[in-house]
Image 1 (cartoon, rainbow, N blue to C red):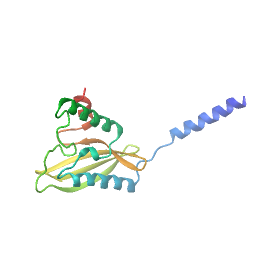
Image 2 (cartoon, helix red, strand yellow):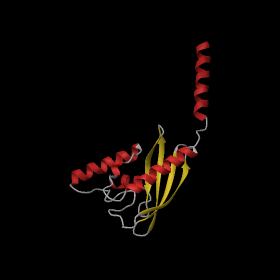
Image 3 (spheres, rainbow, N blue to C red):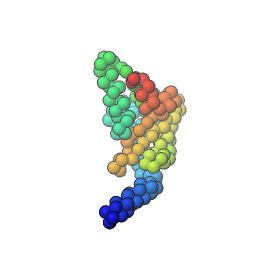
Length: 156
């Protein structure tokens, strides 16, 4: 009987812990997410390798699948440009104009970026926070509403 009560109490405590609300990212964490994305966009001109960015597991696995597909095909597969800008080149006046960040879900952020690259263009980068580091979970460009959805569709 005592064992049953102990198990019931333990179950109640575990349930209560899972029901507790998880707070969104703090303002300082959101500022760090914004700085991380700005750093990515500032590195874009030149020989930027998008594979060097920290990605969330789903997007990281999809990029690895695309790389394997490209090796097998001897060229390109689904990713045919830098996913952060849908571009292969940058203009002479390429520049980060502004960015803004907002919390997204329990441990995420969305950073909106406005760039000048052959005209003004807006992008959005979704991130997730894990072990105090931000990881890119999706990228939205004018021609790609979701890089994750595009890769899931194109890499079947």
